[in-house]
Every structure is written in C-alpha cells, then in structure tokens.
Amino acid sequence: MERVVLYTRQHENSFYELKNKGVITNKEIYVRLHMGDIAPYFMEKYRTFVKMAEEIVPRPQGIEYPIWCSISKRNCLKPVEKELVYEIEVPKDEIIYFDSGKWDLVLNNLYIPKDEDDAIDYRKEIKSLGVKDEFNFIDGKYRGKFPEIEKKIKDSWIRIFDIDRWSDFTVQANIWQIKKEWVRRIIRPGESI
Image (cartoon, rainbow, N blue to C red):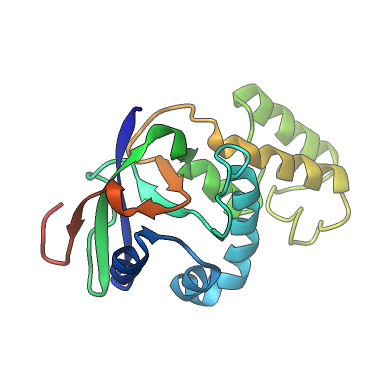
C-alpha cells in the first residue's frame, strides 16, 4: 500500500488523545475554538466541505471533521506555543487532496469555473443579468433573486478536488483521523521540521 508523508499542526492536547486513544480526531468544538470570531461563517462552509469530502473518502463513523494537512514540510505551518506539528505517513487511499485556491473561492461564495472558457461564459452570464460583481449571490444583495446562479455556484464547489496544477503551495490534504502508527515524528516549538 502506497503511503504519503503529510504534516499537520495541532493543539498540544492532541498528544494526549493520541497517547490515550491511539488516534487523533477533529471535533466541531476544536474548529470553533480555532476559528474564533469567524467560526459561525466558517462552520457553514466547513460542513459543505465535509459532505463533499466524504464522497471521495468515506468518513469513519463517529468522526465529525477532517484534519487539514500540508503536503510538504516547505509549506507546512511551523510549531508554535501550545501547538505541535505531526509528521505522518498516511495510506494514499485515506487522503483527500484539494486546491486551497479554489477553497478560497468557496469561502467567498464564488463560482469555480471548469476552465478559462467556462470562466468567460460565467462572467457573460452574470453580466447579462445586469449584475456588476460576483460576490453577492449567496449572502449579499442578490440573495434569492437568482436561484439558478446560486445553485450553479454551489454545484461548482466540488471542483476544489480537481487539481489543475500540483504545487506545494496550493494543494492541501485532509484526512479523517491520525492513527498512532502513522506518526513518524512530533515536532515541538523550537525544533526544526
């Protein structure tokens, strides 16, 4: 079975979960604490991500949210106070790769085009509606006025899993859990990755 090395920064308390349960999982309360003031907005998008991701790699029973990972040590978050970085070796079939640039489009309620031609066609379509910008269909002033465009936008979000260009800086990974046997190394603040 092919394995892939990933990196993920987690709260130091995750070590106790790993030690006592043999696995680290992500829970809504952890996400809410991490996201702070923007948690209510982010959770809506994150639930959408979960629904799409579990179509690619089924979500194990009892697991709420995936764990975000970097595909390279060059671009991973570094360990900081109260947080550790796990270097893990994960079976390839348990990894959900996605394009972080496209994820930013989801966070901004924007359409993800298939390609440049599709992007041009989409801009023409919204311009023909008399709309001057793309930002207000889901939460803004056009909300509810163009349901076919809202649907088109939301249906396009699955494209975050279409990797057009493989890059350490745009491709990220999600996994549903970190198993103890996957952990190669734990990097603490002050230690180099």
